[in-house]
Length: 514
Image (cartoon, rainbow, N blue to C red; front, top):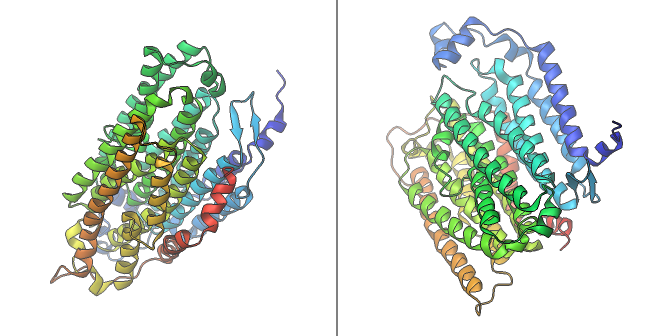
């Protein structure tokens, strides 16, 4: 069988990611050093203070010799972004199973941008003696998940979509369990992989129903043949249930809080924005392309899930005392707002969803960067009470945290307000109050708007703790790593500029053909 290798020229993002993956793997293979017995013991016991007890032993040799490794990976990924940031012409590969266009290219750029921020943030964590010898594995796993996400959003065939989904999910489980001897990371990894397995099985079950009803796995073929029957409706529900797990929508969210709490904080940030964003993009594309003839069915399903996700997550977030669990329920609520844009079923829905994910990337990663920095310098604390009086000792970090939380809550003039506005506008576009579906759409948007006020309350709980609540023993003043400062600068710039400067939204809108 002859293979037309020129098809790979239509897959430049995947080709460049594969090249980066191979480079990182080879570099790690030939430069990694065997970890010392002390480093292994630290990893197993999870005691960073062990070095001090040993008389200030030197850090792991590989950590000292490979300080260039993180910048190398970040530069490679930055080059990948530069190569793929410009809109590309629509094209296909492998018999139409793979497709790309300007809009898909923008989506991949947003995902790569979020991944780059995560990799820069990870530098301080990966310099720890108990994690430095796993640095290469971390980069390989992260890039592997990004490659799988790219395949997901470019899929035009359910088989390729499912392969991309698993390429993203399996390495993600390894990332979640990377600190397997610390902070319940192994438990988090076990819960993630078990629920991912069940969700994938349910999704495959739904895809098999759709294939049985239409005789094809190509998106266009299914859309031209599918009709609303009990078999296809059940297949659609099963498929949505499987993908709802990836996005952490209620009632498929039960893994989220435990996984976010147990995973390394850097991985939690990656899981909360990049993984969730890729799944939301895929859901939007498949609902609007494959299940377009059944729009009246999936709209009702989405309405129920959106209201449940936003409302239940907000109510549970109020009662959290662990900041990572708090951000887990925040991410569930944000997922509801992301999916809300899909209700409009138009080009504006795609633009609003893409813009929302971009803003969510910079705001949420700013919060997780501060959580990770506090955790690294203060014995792993992630309790909200520990942030009482945080402003007195670390005013700059408190200020940046406040900006990011205001953006997540949708307070003007920060970018989060604009992202929520465009999501509401996309959902309500075309809705008529003279129809039942129109009335329900406006009702869902109103409920989402009310829940925005609730979310402001629990985001302000953290602000109150940092600026108002007294604390006789606040967290000590500490100096964040240069990499953390750099990512916070990028995220803060995004939170402030991406909203008031229209060129960002215009860049996405032009790619979507608006």
